[in-house]
Length: 152
Image 1: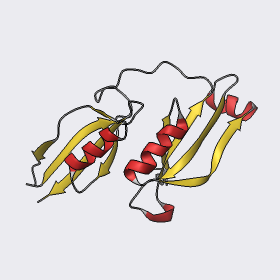
Image 2: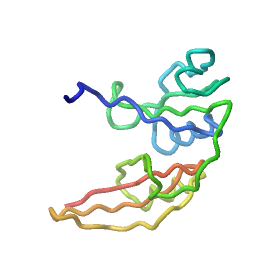
Image 3: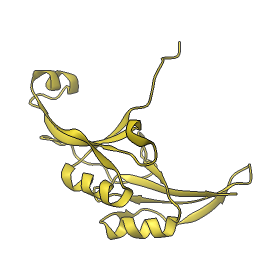
Image 4: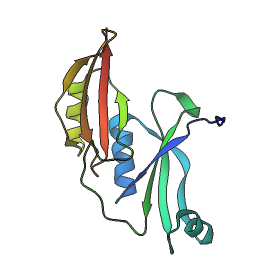
C-alpha cells in the first residue's frame, strides 16, 4: 500500500536557532512562517521520548515554491546530544540542496556568511548528456548544503 502523502518540511536541530535561521534567510532568501515555536510539556516529552524536553524555533519557507511550498524547520532543544563530525557520507539525511545560477558565486556568499567549505566546485556529465555544476558547503553549524546549477 502506498500512502497518500505530501512533503511538508525538513527539520534541522540547531545549537543557536536564531543565528541559523538568519543565515538561511540572508543567504538563500528563506522567509519565516509564523508563529515561532516555543514548546514544552508532557506531550512534547512523550512525542520526543526526551524527559524534560523543551524547544524553540521557526519554520522558514524554502525559496521557489510560493506560499504553500515546503519549509525547513529550525529547532533548538534545551538538551542537545553530541554533534557528529560533518561528513557528506555519514548515514542518515545528507544535505539540503539549492539550485543557484552561479555555483562559485553562491559558494563565496555562503562562506562569507559563516558557512564552511566541504568540497570543491566540480562539473559532472550524466548519461543524458546534461551537466551539473555543484559543490558541498556547510552552514555555520556544520549542516551540509549542496549548491547546484544544471546546463545542457
